[in-house]
Length: 293
Image (cartoon, rainbow, N blue to C red; front, top):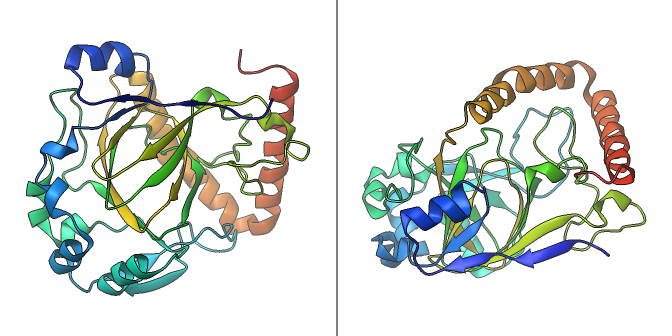
């Protein structure tokens, strides 16, 4: 059986009414081809332009290695001048990625280069949206966003491969308890179903983004991403109208995160081993029970 992946819906343009009925209310991902082609960024945001406007700020870099339970959360693997990193990802494949660094704060002129899609929905959150940079072959591990926001994720200067899974599949994806990511011991693109049987039959969506494509990723959707070229993306985040989703976000960001940080600080590897074992138990129990219904 294997993973049950279907291609994502792709539209050139979409009206607010169609977007609300087909994708926002149903919380279904879609790629919008023309949204960012109307932005100044579509033409302006080259690698050289980003180097020029952001400058040689030292940035933290992250790789795909498994998280060290003794290290602080989101501990970086290396540091590099931003301009040197841009040169690197243009020149050769690398596992190193940039996130948790906001170039727009360093170069506020970038604010004029994109437009929040308020013609489709409201509730946008960030004055300084998040940007992500990756080298060819680098991967973002399978996870969902802790704040449970809707995401409009626009890609520039290359291609990106994305797998998406509805939140309801979280246990079958071997979600780590008290965390927003999956067990890191399997390859979601080519999983070993004998070792990880709960993945067999999981349903998802496959997506490929090119320069200027915008992915609408609804609240709670799990995502794995691979940079097929050295390239970058910007994510515009918006609240869901549901108060239950907002309460879930608040719980994740406060109670759950603080508890998890406290346990990791005190018990380190013992706690992480327990969480991984529990992820396996929960996944196989959900699989044997035929969940989700």
